Image 1: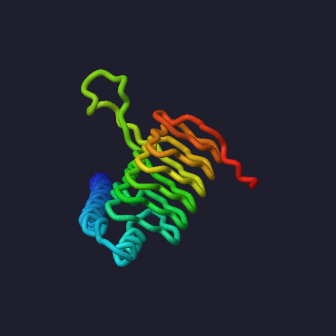
Image 2: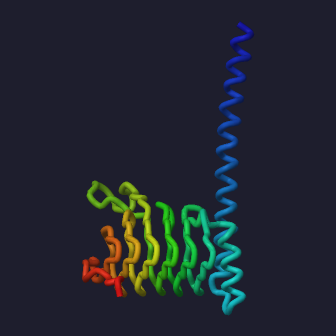
Length: 198
């Protein structure tokens, strides 16, 4: 019987240590998020080449993956950087917004013009009750290589954009974009395919 008590106590200690380590991870993630938010608030508006260098160095610490040659203009908003992967030679334009709750993967040689929004989170709308209480949707945005996203475009959660695609200015992209496609409008529709043989 005493052995049983020891086993019960041992299991209880093991459970509490697992709970403690989960709490510790949560606390560290909260602290890391706060450090990023405060640091980025200062750095995102820091001007000139020194600002570019500081932002690049800062993002190296916080992004899930950061390739070479990242260039971030002033005013770029980044949420959940630990869920955002960025390839080589990527440009993020003035006041663009990356909301990474559902994961964002950006390939190489991508241009995201000013005031674009990449939104990986939403809500189910066909449920009873208040909209804000509806089931949350978290889906990734995947952008291929050599893509140009025109100014003030919105990319919705769950969208994949193929290599070489061009998104016209002010587009609302709600479905996948094929390789080398030129799309535009609200919602974005296929305009043509790029002729890359010339």
